Length: 213
Length: 182
Image (cartoon, rainbow over all chains, first blue to last red; front, top):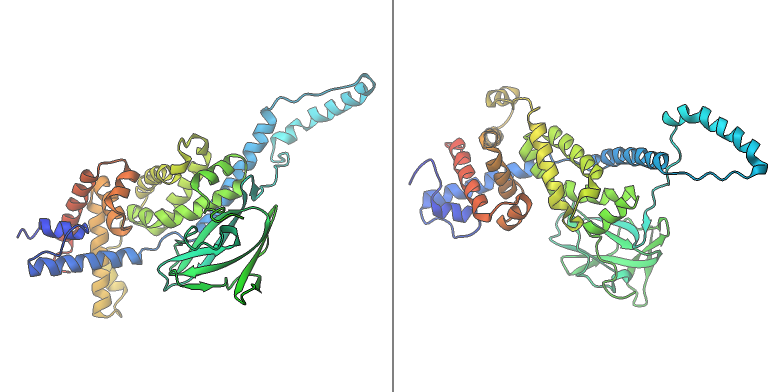
């Protein structure tokens, strides 16, 4: 065995494509290597949710600048009736005087960002379940199907998230852990009993966002 | 409402919303890909703070260039390319990593096992630093993120057997750096 390199068996094993190497020393070394690298990866200090807020603050500012620029370069049609000519002239003078201010930081108003679009409101569900292997979302919005909306791991250990577009309305839902346990959302604003006596979490979505969750 | 009428929001849906002016929707992509690629960024930059800076810059650049994303359904792969470039740029700003002797001096209270763990961690970090850029990317994706070769090929735009060769060579080098510690 070349002491400086892995055997082909070990490489295949470490690729997840083969059995552990037949040679006992190489097998043990490959096992320790995989374990040590996995621990190294687990110890890495990955970017936290603070990053999201910083990015969103930056892109909001950029979007505001873009909106101002679009407004500035867009052709504007100005209709002046003869009877209002004098008033229009005054307005033009005022506008001219205000150009310098407009170029400065006092940008025209930017349309408020709306969480609602043609496909509904974006609703983010979060659930902390460190021991779970799979978490899904079932509710009146997907026919209580526990296989269509699967949570993803967040960067924080044990935190699961999924984002769903929902039209305005009132919904009941539960989290499904490992396909077996149906659990109400502990952070929901309200829990309600259904006709079978089961406790469900309640979510109310308005046209501009979540009203109650 | 019909069953399955509320699918998880796809990347393409979010990109469309953002391009229509819904800036807040971009937060969905930021959260999604910070979680998916955070470990890759740290592994590539070799420093958590630099990785966070690189990732922030990458998200802002992606936002600025979002209209040029030709396949919004593959936003992840597109963003990954931007992130890789940012990590390479930020990596050049990194301070030399602390030497193993400094780890020992700074932590005299550590038990033998904890000291051994610190030695191994430092050795792995040094080994990753010594890899070529291509080897480092492949090793980080395979071993620190645990991605299968097919997914790696999709993200990096390379053939699977090419990536397999890079990972094998990287593994040999990391093994040499861990000699006596395993």
